[in-house]
Image (cartoon, rainbow over all chains, first blue to last red; front, side, top):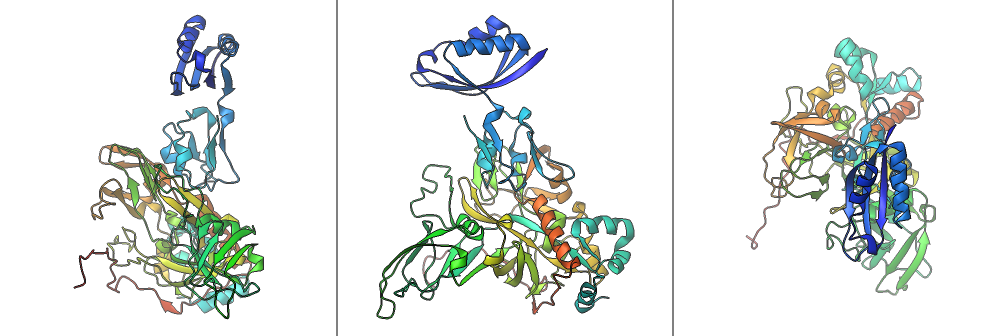
Length: 136
Length: 401
């Protein structure tokens, strides 16, 4: 079965100049899509990636990354729309490039669909009551 | 056809027919305005959006020994309040920010705390740090004050908003290559998004577009309690171009409103931060419209397809105060999530919460149906489209002429 895993990777300094992702996708024959990357020489690197492939191979690949001393977090746990704070104005709806926010047709509440989110974080800047938080 | 007194008598007898403006649209569509005018007595409206011209004034009572904060300095949780009033009266505006806030020095600034947030915390019953200094006088000898207080501890706390409830507003877009941080929110480059700010069919002043039933003294829903229309709002601009139905096609009328802060609910008073712009207050207002005749029923039943807002470029025209607009779009399009502008399709975002506007209109409807809220005759009218009032820009002068 094909799956997509969205993960936040933190590279230690000594791995930043290695072609880690390229080696990984060749080894396991999986697809990748980099959503965000801050990888600078001599600094800890941060990358948000979606890996797509057969369930087994994706899991193996992620395990491989962990063994290389790369810290790994699933992405969707890091994105929060706090329902106690949100006023359901919908300013995030127009900002979001992937349609991850939408109005519920009946209630007119703003719904957040994790699966569509690419963590570009434009909504975090746009939310006037700070109901949307992204934590790495 | 119907007087406000007759409607109030129906409220007292529990016989009043009250619907929200949203429900009125369906009713008028099905039955027409003549029948709707006969059936319905009151239409409730609601709006919930950022309204920068919002403020509070407080009277603390005197500490012992007494102190003249008037003419001195006063900070509430570090946010400056205006002290040019009597000894222990101060005034705090929603957009005030602490003197040590970096503003836009590190662009875009966060503006994470300011007057709007202080107001929200007070309404939620929280304690706020009051720090004041004074020059000291024979009658008011104290020179320094540092204390916490909550709304329970002080004499008066009044919300007074010089401009709320805009009748229609701009749709903001950005034609430039760079992202803009504005009071209309984040505007992505190359027409990346379009932000608007109106409750549309629930918006109070779009339902009585010629201010026939509301005016000075009208009792309203203000942030969870009863408030009043105090005056027309600043920048009230009733003489703009209107549709054949009489609905303004540009930002037009505004209201100044007043109410007891101590009675308000934090659900309807929210501090807000616009990245790169500043702090503001999100305010919830609902106004009952008495259906005194068919014309009012007609207006209250107009669908979103027949209300238009101007699309304004916030990268050029707006900051340079040029009057040109890029087009007009209906509120039906705006609420659909997409507008068409020439060959472009642009995603829309709303700064005003329709969910909350609907909630407010529903609460007000409940109050009226439960005989807790009677309607008021305005003490005086607001300047209408015959007033000749046009709001001005400020022409800068080199010297006194």
